Image (cartoon, rainbow, N blue to C red; front, top):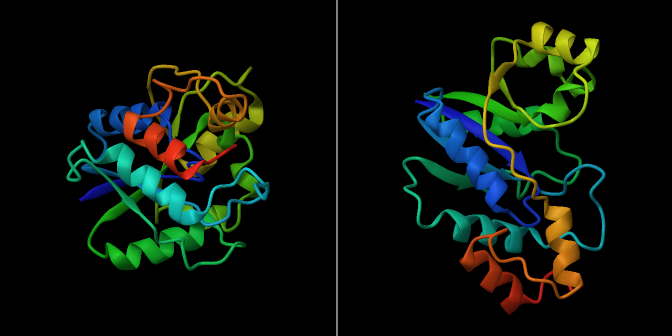
Length: 196
């Protein structure tokens, strides 16, 4: 089976993440999409970071109505420590899925700096790399070089202008976030009093 991995803090997971997952699945490149919740994403140590358990629960709630043959989630990073790297997560996940081919799906903005990632050269041949188009300005030489050098393939999806940062800000300002997150996630945020 070919599994597409979407890793992130999901603080909180929103409909843009879900559309990305469904678009990736519908591309025909993957047999399953797996959301992997980051333990403590690099440079994201801030007071608005919900606990790992809350973020995992929101991911679980957001995909409950979708077949887990199509989209599922993993808490593989929960015990990996805060200085974990994506490559290490994939290595651990590969042990859980020894017969499957894992592919990493990233936002286009990440491709610009992929050459500086931990063990970037070791992805080649071991894990397939995909990027999802995002409006992030002019495509530069470094972007094109990284696409070529690391064998990135492009996935298309509709542009959805939603971010976890804007959702947290809206919650803090008592604004309505309906349609930015699923109803179950909205109720969870309210019941747990997250992002206030």
